[in-house]
Image (cartoon, rainbow over the protein chains, first blue to last red):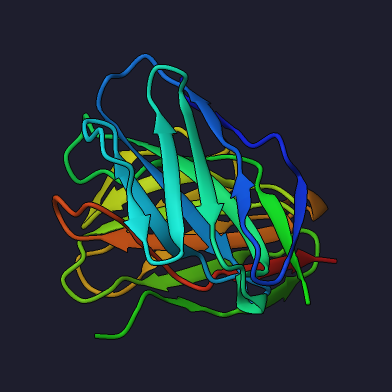
Length: 117
Length: 113
């Protein structure tokens, strides 16, 4: 079974600076998807960024980028120019690609990110 | 196109009562997933349904929990004879066939008193 581990329960960063959240996973599959979700106090799960395992290029969405190391099974999220609105819980998630259309996600425990003004 | 709609947002039940949580997927989405989030934890997969079919219920507790997604109407997660340990946030997500990602609702927070 796949597992996802986030080893940082809490992180904090000064506004406008850069922070990196860590995620490692375990799988025997060669093709899969990885995600970072943001959960603000409203509880809404918001997709931040997605990475397909077969793509070597790291995904980027504006101030958010990932460092995907497939051999090391590592998938870290970098937030540049941190803003107060980035404060939230961040969850790393894994999804198999074997079953077409199936969105069964395996989540990590989450990292609570605080932005200091 | 409205997002995934869950209701109620908050639900309080006494021990032994039944809880019914509803999820209306986004238009055009025929796949529904239910997840449970205990306090200070990540989301845990419960069940995956397509219209009128349960595809994967490997995360559902064996007793008291059931889910359905009828041909017409929302998906329902039903918890019978609730206990304090059922207190959690329950999230629904939906995706179209072959979709690359699932879209989440805002969740239902169930409190058992």
